[in-house]
Amino acid sequence: MHNIAIDGPAGAGKSTIAKKVAKELGFIYVDTGAMYRSMALYFIRNGIKSDEEDRITAVCDNIQVSIDYVNGEQQVMLNGENVNAFIRTEEVSRMTSDTSKYPVVREKLLSLQRELASKKNVIMDGRDIGTCVLPDAEVKIYLTASSAERARRRYAEQVERGIECDIEQIEKDIIARDEQDMNREIAPLKQAEDAVYLDSSDMNIEQVVKAIIDIYKSKVKDI
Ligand code: DC
Image 1 (cartoon, helix red, strand yellow):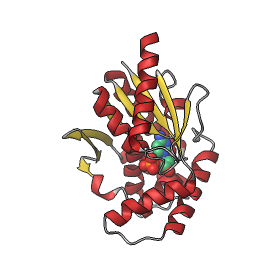
Image 2 (cartoon, helix red, strand yellow; image 1 turned 180 degrees about the vertical axis):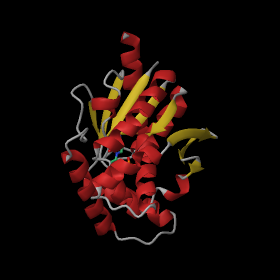
Image 3 (cartoon, protein in one colour; image 1 turned 120 degrees about the horizontal axis):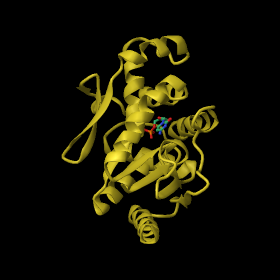
Image 4 (tube, protein in one colour; image 1 turned 135 degrees about the horizontal axis):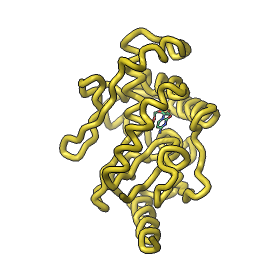
């Protein structure tokens, strides 16, 4: 199987880019952040606070996460319920960053992610894909952009959806999440040694997509 790993901080455009690359190469796009988000949603719905590691550990056995595809779009199923519509709120984003540091949460999703990549050609995005989930991926990309640019993009997205928001608050939230994701003990966000670093601050979507496809083609030719 061919695997492409894309890691990077919040709002770097990983999912937008990965979806387009997947389409061009005929790969399946796997959004691992959505899986962590669905677990965070479960904790919120059950009144569990992010610092209650014991309760989180205790309920993990009751959580079943799986994914499905509808018209090529990944749907996350939480105990059989499609929760895609509920996992993109600020509250869930914060809870996800706060709870994805726990070993029990990460272990739960690691095998599912590896299993998906072993069966299909996938482009998978997250924080620890190149370093931990798929250490043998043929192509690893570390995709980033300045926090100001990432906040600008997120702000534009929200405005488009008719959601009122404050760009400075968005940038603050992004920086806080990155800080937490980069400094946790298990599977922190960092560039894999063999990953290609791409700063998209001054690149448009098409340029980034083309850069990744060119890297993939040059690598696969050598395999
Ligand atoms: O990619 P995203 O913004 O949907 O991710 C939400 C949170 O999930 C992020 O703050 C950290 C966590 N995450 C993780 O720990 N490991 C991954 N592979 C993907 C996401």
